[in-house]
Length: 162
Ligand SMILES: Nc1nc2c(ncn2[C@@H]2O[C@H](COP(=O)(O)OP(=O)(O)O)[C@@H](O)[C@H]2O)c(=O)[nH]1
Ligand SMILES: [Mg+2]
Ligand SMILES: [Zn+2]
Image (tube, rainbow, N blue to C red; front, top):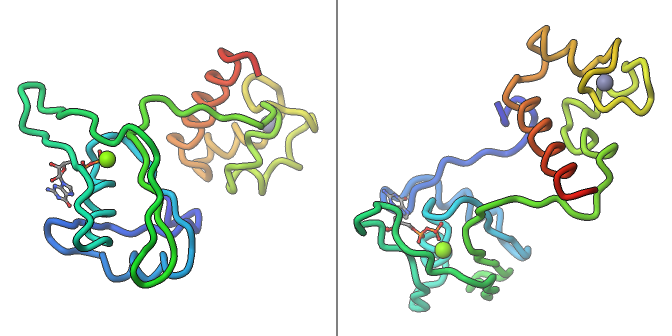
């Protein structure tokens, strides 16, 4: 789904040594932030990049199977090959800040490309008539999951009063 939207996707495993070289190359001389759910292996990957540093990773063997949260602050490290990497705590909730609700669809490339085709130029793509985004979902040109993500993020922005 993401590849078809021209996002770069890398399947990576530190345990089985898969996809690491290609990902490491992308980090060269850049500052990269690692983000994602707790327990997916962010700190393990950062550890792999920093031989000898040994930052804390999670033990998932606890009774809950969920382990404990060990990364509690964002930490930035210098990469031996040049560049920096920021390890972050797991995400419980994603909050969008500094963004108007009306702008949200601009951050979905497949929506951005179709915005001019909505009847209303301030269409929120929820219940307006002649909405090009909803039509594209019906026509399966926009993936339903992406539309669901859009609606969920929009809802969370409304809850927080944006
Ligand atoms: N099977 C497998 N387990 C991994 C991999 N990377 C990390 N883990 C394990 O997953 C657990 C959580 O890893 P951690 O790096 O702390 O996750 P974080 O919360 O995203 O920082 C630890 O027990 C790791 O040993 C991997 O590529 N494959
Ligand atoms: Mg971590
Ligand atoms: Zn619309």
